[in-house]
Length: 388
Image (cartoon, rainbow, N blue to C red; front, side):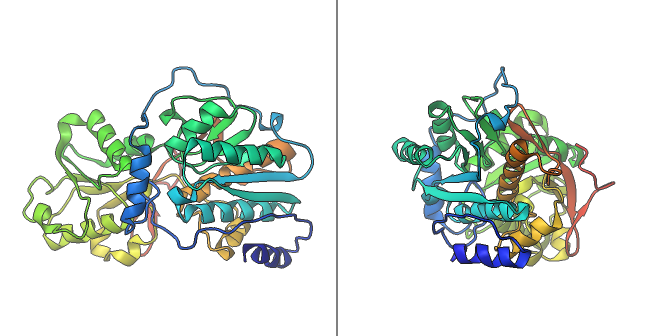
């Protein structure tokens, strides 16, 4: 089906010379928090079981200089391999592949694209697919994996150019020169959000790995100001039990380190039980258009969200929308597009880059803009520039 869609879009755009190899993808779109569906308990368990013994938040003293991607790229057609553990990341296998196809169609070049599904993130499965990728002559791989998969690639593969859109380099044990990272810098976003907080901070999470990381970092940076911490693992439980008459939430800066469905419910319950916060703060996980469907305007009046997704070429956005993607609200798809843009321009140097983000020391450098959830859309604070 995707093969057909690709050529429909090529006809629409007047594109003629494309070679595209494809495989089927997982259906359905998911709400992302650590690669798990909001209502898919089994998916969340799978992710947590796979990653629970992996090291996190490790700072690297020596950082390699940003590599020249052209050193790894083969001559001829632009060839991209997508390495995905579909059992782990679910429908993000589908959306990332859409983002890659959209970028290649936008560039109007001859290309070859193939998906290699590892199933899970067992080392044997990953290395088997890496062998197939090499055998077919691919030299550039996009791998939307978790920390476990990233660590396997980092210690086992040195002769392929790999872009990991889901992981920030500072969270890795090893940083070989052939791997580029595109994960959001949540710590930088939190540092920016601190400028809107007062000295009474409440932390509400969902018990996931990412939520735990964000909570830990906030406590490290503002320990004396943290007055209340609560994990809401089952959103169907009685939320009122910890919100109603909770003085530690009144006039507090409330960080919601949880997916958009849970964040929306908490915001509405705060208003219902007459809790008036100083502000409600969220990192990129809260930047989702669903917020406006799941809440009332009064629920959102204190909502401030850190966003690192900037504007990009309208034509590329149009192609993404035709394929069912919207990188304007999906940072993983946005990150994958940045990686494609950086590597493509390194090989061909045709025209200007589509995206403004630089890659420094093998990591995409994201700027941060704080936006307020308005009556019907997100509204930039101040001059609206990404100036953090």
